[in-house]
Structure formats: C-alpha cells, structure tokens
Image (cartoon, rainbow, N blue to C red; front, side, top):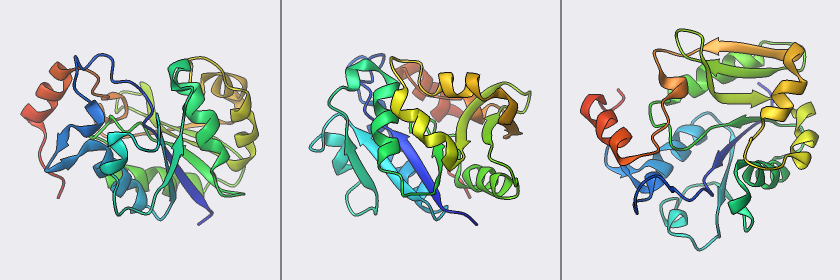
Length: 201
C-alpha cells in the first residue's frame, strides 16, 4: 500500500441551501463533514480539509479528529482554490483522493474499494468512480505525479483540466447505484436522501 491522502474540499458557501450549511447537516447523528472525515481517516490516509477560514463553524465539527485543516481565503474563486491549497498540504509522494464532503452516500467501503483498485495498478493513473451505469463522478484518485498540476488550476472547474489533459491515463471503477454522483446541495436533496437512507452496517 502506497502513501495515501484524502482531500475534503469544504470551503464552499452552501449557496443553494437557503441559509443552512449542508456540511453541518445531520448524518445518522453527526455533522456530515465529520462523518465523511471519519470515513476517510478509516482508509489509513492523511486527511486534509479545506475551510473558508480556520475559525469557521465547520472546524468545530472536526474537533478531536486527526485531520489537517487548510484555510482558503480565496474560496469565492471556486473549487480550484480549495484544490490548489489542499494539494500543497499532501505528504510528499502520496496519491490524492478528492472526496466531496457533501456526498454521504459514499461509504467507507467505497473509499476502500477505490484505494484497493488504485494500489494494484502499476503505472501512474487517475482513477475515477462512476455510477453503476457508468456515469462519471467521485471520488477521484490522482497519482502523486499529477499533483504539481494542481498549482495551476483556476476558476470553478475543479480538477477537470487535469482530467482532460490526462485521458490516456484515466481508469474508472463503478460504485453501487448512484453513489458516485449523489451530492446533496439543496434542502430538497437532503430530505429525499433521508427518506431512503439507512445507517451503514
């Protein structure tokens, strides 16, 4: 098993939640951000969480967890700001998983499945999760050799420019159902998810 890092980009504004913070929404008794950080930590990875500022209320949800907090004062730029700053905190030589923290349907077993598949590939690759029907989604794992490119990301396209420039190295792995694309951005999304979600066994 190689070195692992997981980045939870949590510096966004929850602009579609109408005053609520999606990352502090309750997931089986704990804030969503804390649940996702614990799942990432269970994969034996360095876990990095980007925040708008280090005294943001989201930081309280991570109290007691062995995570690296990174402030993103330019978070209004979009996802690229989180990825640039978060990638700088990755331990040298570690592969990096991007795990959006507003996707509580992604379980610890899915994270482990991604790492296990990545670890048996000998050449430097990007491994992207898909739905059961093959639609691309998250998480995405980048080999350490791709991390220098994160410093050049701009705007709100996230890591899409790196993916587009590296299609020959892209591999995909299907997760069950719609997990790879089920991000919860609106109160309605959370209500629908809670109506069908059961605590993981």
